[in-house]
Image 1 (cartoon, rainbow, N blue to C red):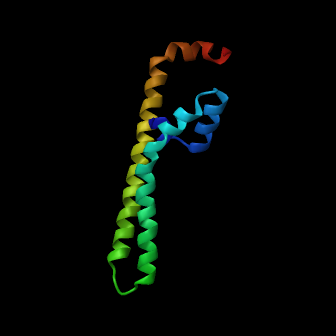
Image 2: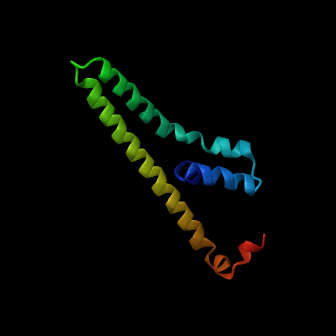
Image 3: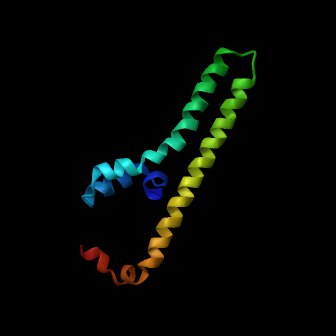
Length: 104
């Protein structure tokens, strides 16, 4: 799940198709992306409200906080993906070095 959510979306989806994995499971595995989408949507909504209500600085501050939160969530997801990719590389290091995995 960390790779599906924290990794780049286009190569992950294409790799899912190339490996002929179940698309339903891939879509289910990417549902935690809602944790990233929600702060970004709130940020946009607060920016729109701040543009309409120039007298209040509340919405501008909330937009900045939401943007910062979405950045933190994205970095966390990317770190999780990198951690798990590195873990799998270490687990199958001998097989990767032999090149047997390329024969499939």
